[in-house]
Structures are given as C-alpha cells and as structure tokens.
Image 1 (tube, one colour):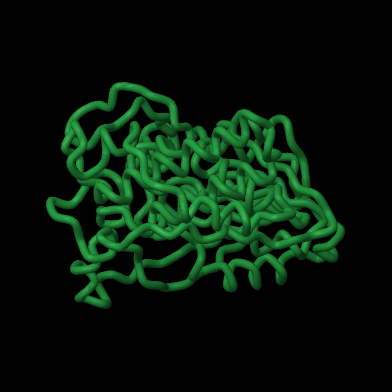
Image 2 (tube, rainbow, N blue to C red):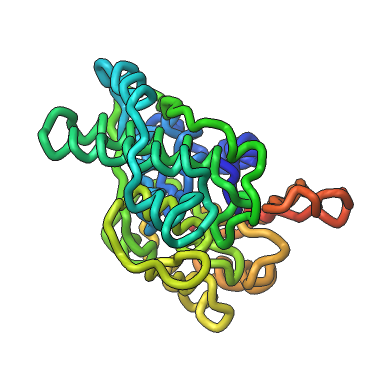
Length: 332
C-alpha cells in the first residue's frame, strides 16, 4: 500500500541498526511494534525473533496486523475462497451508495463497478464468518486481501482525504482480490488495537520500535475509507468527503506530543527503544534527545531518503522532496 510514513523503503536500514545495537540473539527476544500501521517493520522481524507484539489504534491496521503478524500457520483452502470472491457478482451496498460512482452521495472514491464488487465481497466475507464457515485466521486473511486490493483501485491521490474529480486510469481497472500472503513461523505472536500510551503499561519485552505520527495529519481521516470497509457498519458520513467520527491522536498535537512521548518512554518495560522520526516532525531532534537521555544511553542514526508524496506531480524537484529520517536509539 501507498502509506504515509511507511517504512518499507527504510526497513533494511532500520533492521541493520537494530541488529548492531542489540547484543543478545534476536531469536531469544520479544519485539514490539507499537504504532504499526501496515505492520512492515513487525513483518521484517517476525521470522527473526521469539515473538512480535504489534499494535495500532486504527481498525484497518488491526485487520492487516491480524493477518500479517498474528497469522503464522498455513490456512487450508485460502486460495479457493479468494477465487470465489473474484467470481461473485457486484451488489450495490453502503460503499457503492456513499463512496461509489453514481451512488446517492456522488462521492467518486471508486468506479461504480468496483464499488459494487467491494460491497459484494465484504458482505460475503461477513456471511462466512457469521455462519462459522471460516475461522478468525481466514477471516482476517480475506479482509486484509480485500483492503489492499481496494486500495489499489481507489480514485484518490493515495490518501482518502479527498477523491479525484474524474476516474483515473488505475481506478478504472476492475478490482482483483489478490491474496495477502503472510510469513509462516513456528512461534506465535500478539496483536492489539489500543492507544499506545495505554497498552505500554500492560506489556513488556526486549525491543520496542516506535513510529508514531510525525505531524498534524490524523490517520483516521487520511485512511477513513479503509476503516469503513473493514468495519462495514452503517453510519451517516459527514461532508463532501464522507468522513466518519474518527480517533484523534495526541501525537498529532504540537502542545501534547512531548508529554505523551515522555510518558510512553517512562512506562516502557523494554531494554532497547528505537524511535523513527523525521526532520519535519512536531518534535525537534534536540527535544527527543533530551527526553530519551533521561532514561538511559542515547544514540542517533540518520538517513536521507525520498519523501512520500500523495501527488506524484509534486515529485519533480528531487532535492526538495528529500527528507532526513532519524532513528533515535535508547538502551534503557
């Protein structure tokens, strides 16, 4: 998925830094990804560590984490279910009416064909769950597959803060449900959907990786439609973009973020803490260093890389679109 703040391109660098800072064998350690998003860092460490604890407050993320992190053994017949979903006929429902082309709300997030298909597939997955034909493992696998496949044909500039005025070429393609295949491991893992500052008081481990929101953009607003598809509960969408009521993180508020961050570090029962943050964040590198240095041995790593842009036309000036990623390291 195109995802704001995604660490996909930085994952090898992050993994190498963590390797170099942690003395013990990783296979003996518990790794926690507390603001997991699409779960890319936890997925990188899943086959390497004793256990992954993965968390995100957004439900669409929880679905992805249940599949990519919690699922760790083979799911029988999963491809047969994917094939069935790809062959069912579209059916106008909540997504088509509120977010589809020619729907009653006139919101152009999906073509009419794709919106109808998303509704039909989502209803079928829920029917299988309610009749107990599928278990939770298969349910989250199918739901994650739908979310990622729907995201590929969304008529947006990568985020769901707004839709485009005309159906773009990628959004005009017929949706194909592709399997969200996960890494299989012998060891089991844990997934949560909680506020990070609340959860940190209930868990413990060895390596804590933090990738909180950097700025004032709320993920609940930028990815609201993925939550709507995942939850599939009817509500009255607000305004032109069809927003639901969404969770607002204190990490996106300039006057709150430092206090929230220090409380998190103070309550963290982990030996090694790694914070991903960039040079455009609400907290300065100096502020972060001052907070972390109170709790142990501090070190900083940096890397320059290409910034995520929702609108690809803004990527013409290569230098202007570079940003610096900071990986703040703490041995507590």
